[in-house]
Length: 111
Length: 113
Image (cartoon, rainbow over all chains, first blue to last red; front, side, top):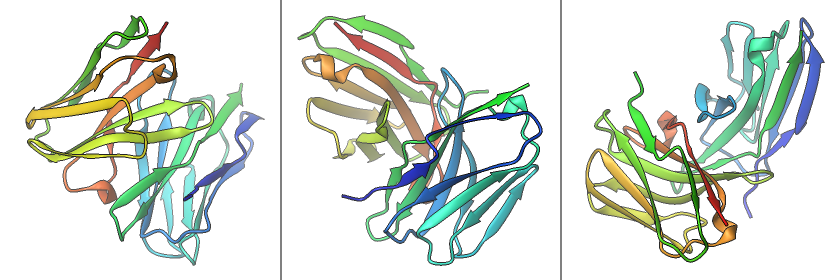
């Protein structure tokens, strides 16, 4: 069974704090995507990382793809209430053009 | 400015009845997907389409069928709804395959009683 594990499952922190969420697998991916989902809406694509070791920044969000392309992390600096949501990672297997989703990290930022 | 819409947004139906969910896109994207989202399971692929009348099964296709008679519409049918099909269903589109990332619809919350 191909799995993509995200941790932590839930995270509640104070506004202004920093946080990191993780996406791990034993499989190698050709690329990895991060989405954010708000209640009652579909996931929205934040970023795609393709190269092992790649780092991408989106304002206060920093995404990193592991050197071996088996894992990824999302770091948020100075979290704000608007960052609240469910963060999903999704890994693409190039051999079958198949994508799998992790079960997500639910993030809550307290004012 | 939504290029993808799902209907209905909410539905309650009885066990054993057929149900059809609709996904409509205005982006002229080739690929369309149906996912279900359940707590602890993330998003799981039900069926997908890579062109008009071209569809294939995903990992949780039992009890579901799909049809795509034109580029803009992708229908998901539950032939005989069961309580285990209570879920939130999402449609997604992408122009050239999964590697480009998906645009998701807002979802349909289906309750089977």
